[in-house]
Length: 474
Image (cartoon, rainbow, N blue to C red):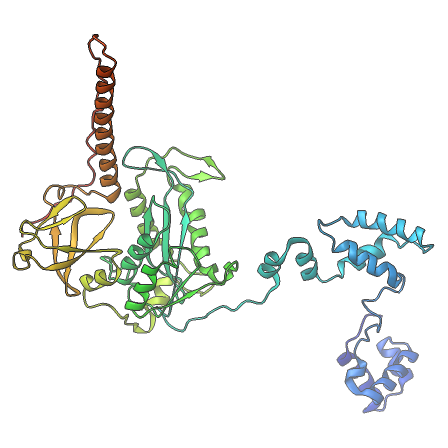
């Protein structure tokens, strides 16, 4: 006889209750013992359909064979850190039972008792609070109703080796801004430098402003910027950027990365779907192919992957492509009036300078523009992209004035690191001259008549030329 549900029992009893069929005949036709039918009838009359359901044991979950004393000891061993195997707990329980003149439990009884202990309690006891939070604590996920309500931003060190300008092999950092609603990538930034507020601001600059590709329409100012507690995100500069752009910054709780799962998933997509096919990929610390690409070439590869692949494919969580999701309902993003206004709010470094007769002096270079002719003696604010010192943005009274060009380096892109390296070489040469002078004095003071052998001077190498950047005459 199979197990009947409450409804199936009622249908069998209904032949007797409403149709008047004797229970003996019902028992024969349905194959149910007559005593069972009488029991079902009593249960239905006394408690209705609910009482016809399967009855659970009142002592379910309580092991009648295992005494309370052994239960408490078994639980204590099971929650011990470091965790013991069930076989080890079984041996200890048998020894304790024999010492207390109790009947040792069977291995099956002990195994079932340990498996019924709350798994959350076991995780907390063995692996600590963080493991318990990540696996069992209820989390709150913010859900958006439209694009640009929430942007997530984060960094990741990519598993790929690239060639820098000096031919050295280095891994790049990828900064990503992703739209929480559509999972679309609004902007990204590649750099060999560790995460910083500079990288974050330059990534936001690309994310907010209009792209030069019609197939990449994501842009606008978000309402909320969701980040972790990294020093770059907690910096005064990023805080000021959010205030100026009227963006509310929300930081995830310390030690709880679950809220950033959407952007972490994109990083996994890049690591698993893009990088394995790119020269220089590193898998679990092993170099799979020789590095060939520069950071600019990888930048083009990533942009192509985002625009033509990631944005076009259906996302399993939102059940449509990010591009389709972001572009639906004729969404109109909020934008600054111009890229210069955006730079005024976002450009990472600003310095006060006085306009001289020959232009603006900054970082050891002279920047000129015909517009500056009417502002000699005025105090201006200089803002610049640390990746390219060939030009600077000059502002007067918080309004964009002009772009200053350094005619000495305008034909090539020069970064702040290049200048720092050049300064270091110059100082090194100066120190060489000082050491040489000390050597001469020491030689003279000793009264040596032998000819002085001077040390060979260091030969300064010109920095390697990089990407050409030409400017029209103003």
